[in-house]
Amino acid sequence: MPSYNTGPRLAAVVAEALSQGWPVRVIVDGSTDNSDVPLDALSRTEPRLSVLRLPANAGKGGAVIAGARSALADGFSHGLIMDADGQHPAASIGEFMAAARDQPGAQILGRPRFPANIPIERLYGRQLSIGLVRLLVLGPGIADPLFGFRVYPLAALLATLGPRRGGRRYDFDTESAVRLAWSGVPPVNRWAPVRYFSRAEGGVSHFHYLRDNVRLVWMHTRLITELLLRRWPSLLRHRRAWRQAGWTAALLLLGLIMPDPDRLSAAGSAPSVVTEERIPIAPGAWDDLARLFAGQTDVTADFTEHRYFPFRKIPVVLTGVSRVSATRGLSLQYLTPAERLVILDGEGMVLRDAKGDSTPPADPRGDAANRALRHVLRLDFPALAQDFELLGRREGDRWSLVLVPRADDLRRTLGRISVDGEAAVVRRIELRRSALQSVEILISAPRPSAPFAADELKRYFR
Image 1 (spheres, helix red, strand yellow):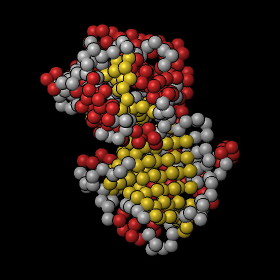
Image 2 (tube, helix red, strand yellow):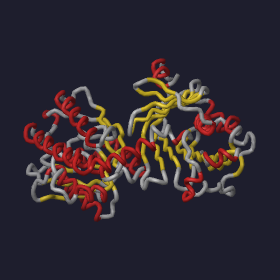
Image 3 (cartoon, helix red, strand yellow):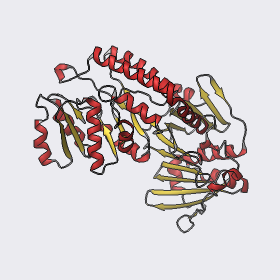
Image 4 (cartoon, helix red, strand yellow):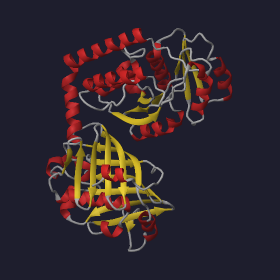
């Protein structure tokens, strides 16, 4: 938490952050208003709080870099950055840190939900920055380059921005996100609320519209020049890999593209299931769990998807929202790295984007994977048993399920599907094609249950 003359709100914001249960490090960036004085007393009674004081103002980026070096030296691998004025949501710290645990090689970037009282010049001014950053990363990926509530892998941040002179003040948020993306650290966007405080409420802003906007213009000029002279070939390869692993692959997740096993000889075959841990499910043995799933109406939950390929050192990371309707099937709304809607129902698959609906080519392997995904999220054992041998294990409310394709061709091309859950909630799905090729889907706790409205059914289903 970098702080420069934050005023009386600082102590309250630090206490709010500490209440989330994480260690908090405040970097006092040459403050002269004594706002950091109450932190000394608090740090004596709160061992999770540490205060690092810089002798002179180094700017937001300089303070973050100093804090990152300090935290890395103390054994921390990741750091969540948040403003000290209370605009950023302390209640979202746990969610963002959990996302970093799930995706340790990614940068977890906040995507702001603005309140009604946001200054209009900020709302429209940031649209220009968003457009320029789309140019700098050759497409979507960084949803909001100016929102500073985010989690960085500290070593990657220091390796990328530490040796540079730029990105030390209000240009830090944008330049760090872009340069990390250039270096291969994928951006993952998550929604977070924003609060704005008036001066009467203790709100403080040190942003100087002329000086700092000139600095931002200069930063974009430098980055665009570097992109054109040096970065675009490697960035094009990176974007091409995203497209190949994402939409042009027509969703590896759903089994639509499974490379010829002979071309992946180095990857080997899917590992066998450990039968001592997961035993065949006898008919009726899990009926109580099936009844819990059958009693659900409509379910909405956020998800994060990791796609592992033999030709990539790091996984492709996608995020989105899943919706399961008791009558309409499954809808997957991908939000990053690009927005697209995938609908799975009894009629097959539909891909929906701004241009309309399209149907991918028929593929028996893809159809089997699609059916499995729909039936897994409803835990429909009779339907799953048509294509798969079912192995499982239960410990209290926690359970795991492994689906082994019955047909040899499906076993060679689709591989193994593993599912983990708690009570009537699916939390993890893995489609493992080989040791080096798989898809892992991590599903958050469901949102409060409510039937889908008519407009939601029209928008997300068919």
